Length: 482
Image (cartoon, rainbow, N blue to C red; front, side, top):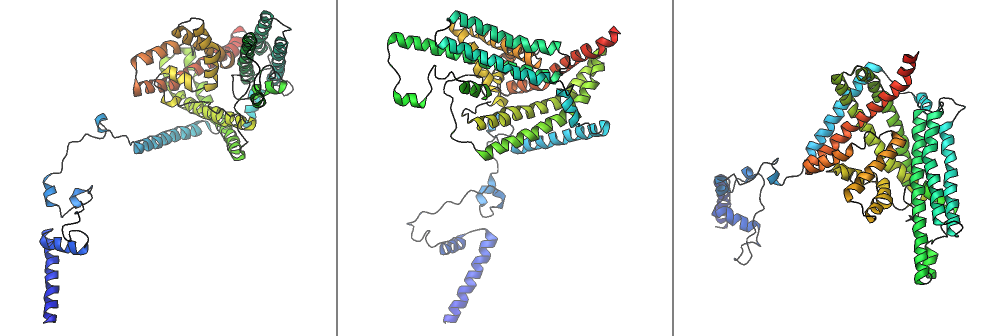
């Protein structure tokens, strides 16, 4: 009897199993599920768990009532109302296509011109005569102007000079900083264009630093006069031990720390990092060496042949060929500019800041997200932006100038210093109407695309214009005169 009951029980279980597979559910299946999960549905006390939603509804064989509906209200992924934002695969595709297209161009360049990279030629860009070093000598002479500004401030701190006389001496010193290297670059024939650019850039940076040095010390003297008039008393001893106050900051150590620090704005007490991170510094130095070689190689191999082939279309004024050369130059020029940005503003400035334990490392912001030309110029070069805002823009506003006039003045000042150091005066003033057009007619992603177009196309235009003028002045003029 027990065997028959066991046999019949096993037969019932096999029958129930066949029914559950064939019918896709039912009372027997529910009974077996209850036996497999004894905590659920044992007496109606415990709640029945809701099954987890299955993304692929076709695989849910047991839910027959769900097969009646397979559609729901939803937008396509590319529609803006869908809320979908994960385009990582498309971004990777763009990167792959960019690499493949540039690899083809680079291979075409190698087949057409061969290997043009020559390290010895790089040395000749800085020195024409190995026994004549005018550009390094110019940079060394710049110490005279820094010491002159320091001595003027020392005399002003002890009231040996009046503010009017001190102002005249500072103006003469700063004017000489601008005129002297430009005159040497024009009159000395042994100086190279690259050496001239580096020397003029050094003097432009020194001008901005000494301008800030003079302004901050003037503000300290004005504050000291106000404190004496108000009889506010001396600074507490604890604060005096932690910070440097005027005129204790007037030392050569403080001056040259500011000259070599990666900033253009002077302070009596710079933020300092607690220690030098050796691994961080080593990474930055290796990046500097690698990207220097990469830039030199790309310029020699990719840009120089394109620029040389662009001279004839410019001479003949063949506009279709000029546009073709411009577009061909745009890709390598923009790539080199991006590498240069990372090399200078991240690798070089961070390496210098780490060596000097300079704490403020904000050398750039998210300029790549710029939706206007104004935002780009305010965020791609933070040291220059801070100087313009602190020593030019805000003083103009305090004197009652309009904001638009102050911004235009900042653009013109920036254009002047770019002309002195990097020959871009005709390019930068055009950004004033361009900034207005982009800000007025382009918003959001369209504004960001417009900024990228100006960066990619605008720089090759300036490069071709100045190279053409240099070629005409230095190569065609002597030939025509002969």
